[in-house]
Image 1 (cartoon, chains in turn orange, green):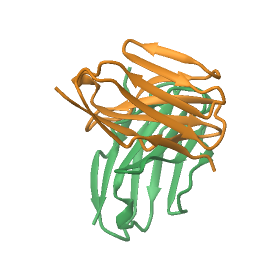
Image 2: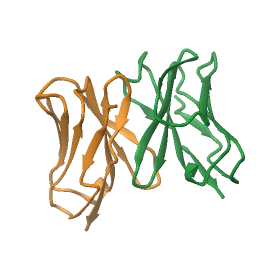
Image 3: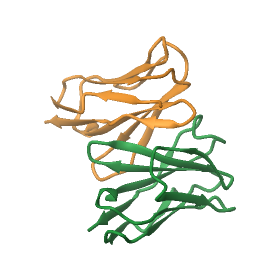
Image 4: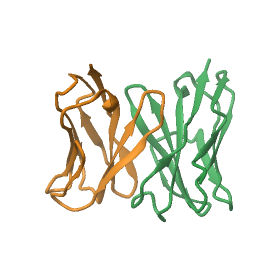
Length: 108
Length: 115
């Protein structure tokens, strides 16, 4: 069955440093979504990517969808303490499968 | 507009018991999906319902079941509870006809502890 692998599992950065999390699927995806879950909270939708090679930006966040539609990345430029949380990718191929998430901590 | 509502928020059960969790989706949303979240395992897909029909099912044993009512509210049931069932159970609703094409709106979750 479809599997979505996400790395790294944890990332600790100094405030102002960049951060990247990567997702890889064992199968081609119809689309991929990204979610953020703050500590003690529930996942909140960030974005959906549909097209091969698509790149979308939200302020300091850049999302990419690979050409083969099997991998994706989320890059945060100049992290802030408000970026703390766990970032999940979710790949769609008949059903939505979430990666294990990357927990980001930011040291002020 | 009210968000996704899950009840109860917290509950404690003992091994062998059964539990029923409830989810009320956002008004107008017809798709409801359930996820199990445990540390290190991320969000594991349980099942998705649309118009009272189960559309997709994850790789969980038959002890996990669910249903959806005509008003789109959904329940999930876990029978013969095991220690490993301790987790946060998240419900998500979607406007789209299938979970594949729409943003998921998550509830706060029901945290189940099995002793």
